[in-house]
Image 1 (tube, rainbow, N blue to C red):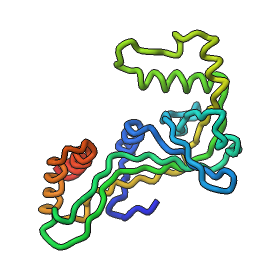
Image 2 (image 1 turned 30 degrees about the horizontal axis):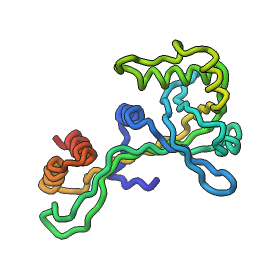
Image 3 (image 1 turned 90 degrees about the horizontal axis):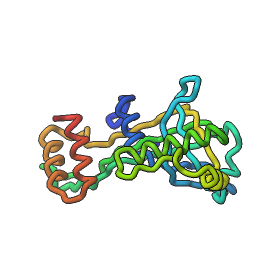
Image 4 (image 1 turned 180 degrees about the horizontal axis):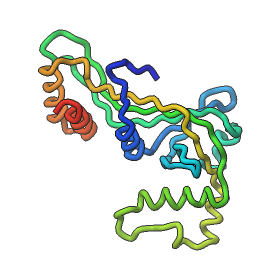
Length: 205
């Protein structure tokens, strides 16, 4: 991913929080000689050696997993809020642009099954059922039903080897224009515009 030096996002705690908040990622690899993407929820975790990993699962009917040999390099994309920035918001002539937050993760893939896959499924469900009424848990489902579902899945673990993070949030603007962009985004009815404004305020209150 191209990252302008002004937009390099190097705060590890912020990037971790971002991944957990925007955990529906895109797994990209080569399949049948062309790029292939699968959109799936991923859990950021640590393996027993303390290495950062992502774990998730694909449908067995998805051909992508069949072309993911052990230790293969893969790319995972996480995208957060983004917003159009109109050049009419500046006090000088300029072009429109787009503000956004994105994280790219490179890693080595490994298939998981058995207890590892079950751990992943329990963790995933527990994360997203947290605080919901009539909370569901894998542990309360019948063993026969869970086994029938697992047979239709392929588990994956990605050992993270590189993280690229970009927060393109008008860092190149002077204070007057920066604050005016925030004000215009806050006037918007679009939720993502509001989120981008909040991210910008974090960096220049």
